[in-house]
Image (cartoon, rainbow, N blue to C red; front, side):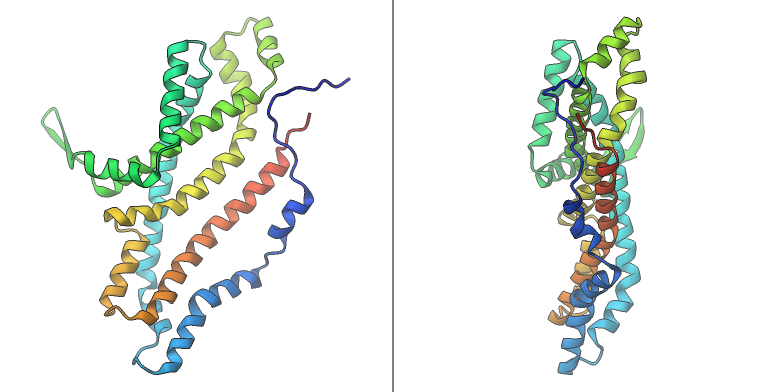
Length: 278
């Protein structure tokens, strides 16, 4: 006998929803790379206006741009780790039985969840000091660390909602069964509820990480030396040649696509594997 509930669940992904992902083959990725990088380079090379082709110049700058992209990944790892740690605690605070804790956690979550990411980044960059003086020891706060702090704030709020939604999605019978076994609320959370929530939280958590990775380019606005900043400097070093814009920024697009697309595919697979049906 089955009973209907109003609890939010993750429905299975329809096979038709996976078709766009299955249809994207290696040749399609190569075509995207050709259209965004090689194509414009060849077109401008035919004009003969410059001695060195855009593709040759791009190859010279590629190692530097790759190092900048790796720095984007470092920022994304740091912001995701910090945001997940604090956001997990904040999400548990939203399901607390203590009303002040529940209300304050909800307020913090909604504030940072609905704040523009760029504004939070500016807040962290320009309002935090350049260094902290702790018991006579000066602890510097570099720009990249401030960028991690600024981007971790919206991540924290979204992770809090992910945790709250996962905990609330479990049937109330789980809590009642744990109570009948004389489990405390803390034991129920850590031993029964949270282990079941992991598979529900993992797909949206990975999707959030993908969004965060693409948002790390915002750090270029505040002067952090990541891939977009280095791209601008490379273009300036080449005298502002307009024929280099499409190849250079096309390379940035391809780098993020190559990194984020497998994450999106894996997220869809996890949603299909861990789908919950009434």
